Image (cartoon, rainbow, N blue to C red; front, side, top):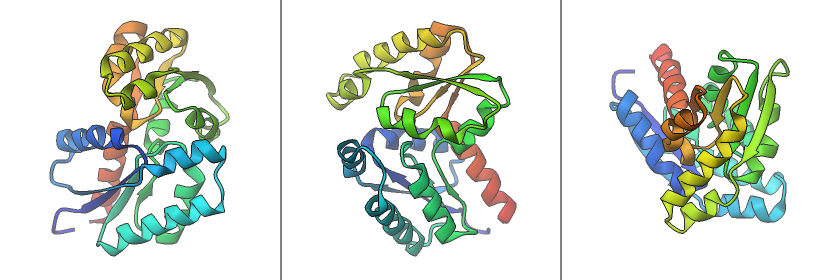
Length: 216
């Protein structure tokens, strides 16, 4: 690939944009980024209670749009929509299309058998554990009220609630932060728990960079 690759970043939460842009700036600043945000996706999933065919069609439309712009790879940053993203990946193979958490899961399972999964969005704790191999034990933990605090612009309360919740995961081998929007709390969680922490943005950028450089 002679020119810098164009990466489409597709978001369901506005809070995911800054963490992934920061991860690219640190690890792969040459990549050309485009952001697509549909902030009704998470609200509609919370309302419906489950993924459905209509949601999959919406994701396929987002994937088609991203591909039509000339994207070389697509990274979804919304953690509760795994089957919808898998449909996009099938539709656009062999283009790399990553779920937000797949690279982090691959990294976490190399670090221990008991993995704490910390989230601020309840549907993520339903959809994400089955994506881990059966050989590991997942300990899910919701930082209740943290996402609402972030929506109000109260990052201090958001971070405090995540740190408090993380203390219940101190008996895990590693703590996985399940969403892009909470990646910035990793140093705080490490300090509070004494456990290693993996985040979605850094893991995803690393995997996407390797995939696209291998194709170059």
